[in-house]
Length: 152
Image 1 (cartoon, rainbow, N blue to C red):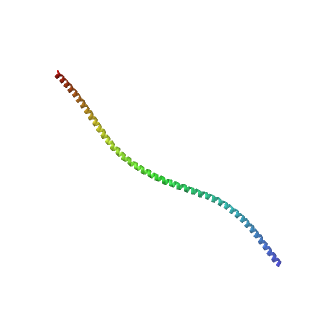
Image 2: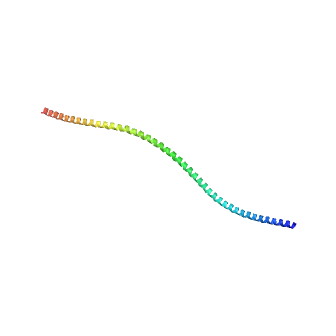
Image 3: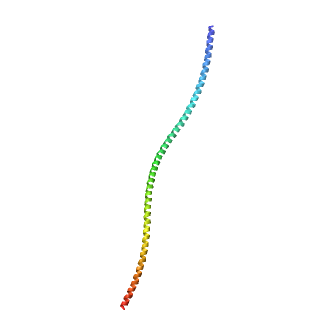
């Protein structure tokens, strides 16, 4: 019976050994599979890190472009404000010039009216002068005749 107990123990140990070897084989397979998966995940992680690095570089580049664009935008806004101020100043100057043009136009009209009156007065005086010259010529002619008649 001791033999039998030993045989049972041996059988039991052999069964446990077979189970342990089977379990060890399963664990080795699982470990190999996990190592493959780990390797695949490491490769995927490396790809993702590379993609992330590119995206970070792209974001930094875009941030730089945004900063440049913002600076240019601020500069353009400043220029736009200056142009608006210049336009307002020019509009004010134009309004003043328009007022001066209106005043000068009125003065020109008055001057034209005065000129026309002066021209009319000059024509009247010219006509009067012609009449006076004609009268003078007549008087001189009469004076000459009178002198001639006195000298005879």
